[in-house]
Image (cartoon, rainbow, N blue to C red; front, side):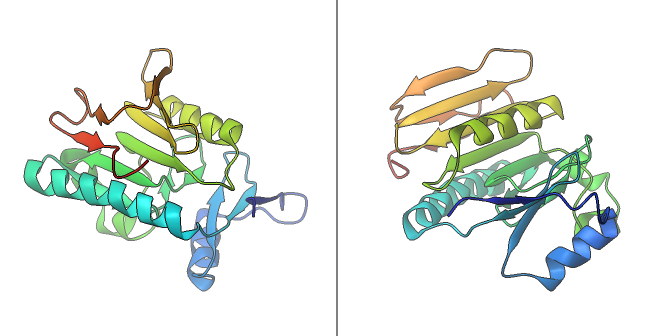
Length: 191
């Protein structure tokens, strides 16, 4: 099943509060919202993708706990990006001082902050082109490093601020580089 995009703007323009309430009232559905206000209804992942995504978040959380310089988030977390989009990366990380600068209310809702680092894991129902556009959107909004993992082709696309996308074929690991100093994602469990 593919994501469903609904343009409600001719009928209704959701405020941030209304979008938050819509998501809370429909917890069995995953929503995102584009910068232009289109509502995206995301299908649930299959078992293999869910397991692999769990392995990714496990590695990121373990490193975050040991490092202590930031906070990690799973795919159920939605962020309000500077361009107005509401996005939920499969895994995300934010420097602790940036996260702590938010109010408690901002932390409880869809935090108005762009992560420093994101990972997207392409599932069978995802479009590569759409995922690549989403990664570019993250970079344009302030993400310093992002990984787009394509299990089917065994490729990782690495997105960095101010640089061309780097494509790695069948890597066993990828590094968090300077953005997440010391973080190494083991892809053997992901492939």
